[in-house]
Image 1 (cartoon, rainbow, N blue to C red):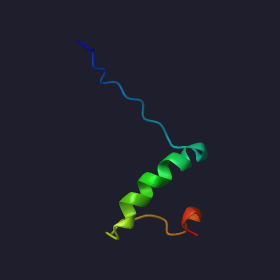
Image 2: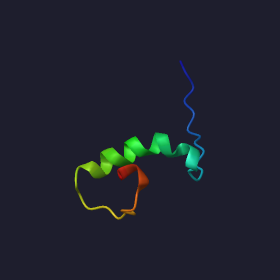
Image 3: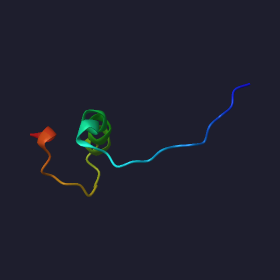
Image 4: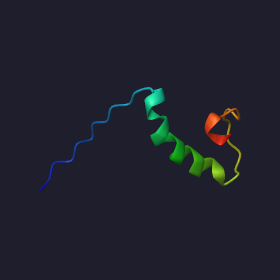
Length: 45
């Protein structure tokens, strides 16, 4: 049997995290639903 850890560290994202964040963010907003986010996004240009 394996022990399950419920610990999680939450931290602010840094510029170095952007390449990992962008695919998730893009998939969420690509559906065209309404979300509040900055439309001036360098990855979308």
